[in-house]
Structure formats: structure tokens, C-alpha cells
Length: 183
Image (tube, rainbow, N blue to C red; front, side):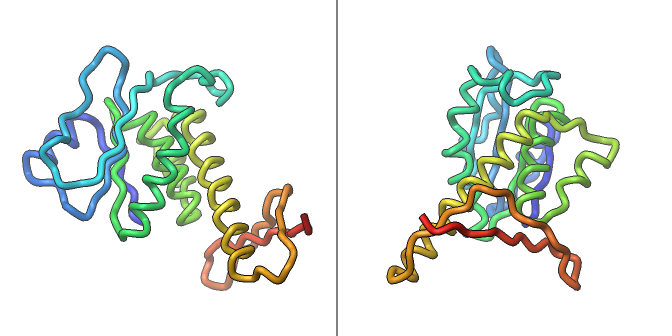
């Protein structure tokens, strides 16, 4: 899945040139400021107000509206993926919030989120990274368990409470193996 990171200045310049209609935009903006005007584009847009911060623990953001919107954000991300869209993550400087969100999406879908952290150009917001990544994992487990129980209704329901084991396949892709427990 292609995920790009933009600052306000970069996305406004891209809007002048014409933004691809094959892109979905996740836009973070500060409280008390106007979000980037994305109203005239035919793209899918998810905008959220959230201050950038140097806080390092997800729990320190517990009162932020973004935290309660992550379920909607996860639905937005999966819808964009299912439609084959690129995801553009944008924030004021294109370094913190957008980088944290992009790293989480890339780690979940591509297994290469570490590249955002090691690039030297970005400073990913850790609470956003952890919240988005964990929400994607939780939603995926829920969807996968629901699909298994729908496809195989004669079998007992399964769940997992343990993290997956990670292995690398021959082609370098991450393989997640879950140990399922009968419910």
C-alpha cells in the first residue's frame, strides 16, 4: 500500500497542481487553526484536530478527540485500501502526526514502517503511531475472527489473546501466526 507524508505547504502546492483522484487524505491540524481546504477535491478525506506534542505515552493523549475517532479512521484506512487508493497523511510540518500515522499504516500493511522512523527527515508522533497501529491490529483481529466464524459456522468460535509470532517468508514479507483458542 502506498502511503505518502505531506506538510501543509506541500499539500497546498499539490492541490494547485491537481491531486490524484486515486488518493485518500488523512489531515491533522492544530486546535485554533483552519484545516487545509480540501473541499473542492473528489477525494476521500478524514480530518482531525489534534495538537502535535512531544508526549511519548499513548495514555497521555487520553482526552484528545483523535483517540475516540480511531475507529472511524481505521474504517477510512481499510476503505481506502479496499478501493486501491494511495493514502496521503498530512499535518502542519509533515514530520510528526502525519509521520506517526503513515508509519503505523505502512507497518501494518507493508511491514516497512520503520523506514519512516529511520529516514532522518521525520519525527513520528509515538502516541499516534501506537494508537493507529494497535487500532488497525485490533480491527483486523475482529474482522478475521468474524470472517472465520462466518465461513466455518460448524466450527466453534475462536479468539486470540496473544500477539502474533512473526516470521519472514522467502520473499521477505512478514508472516503473522496467531495461536487460536476455542471460545
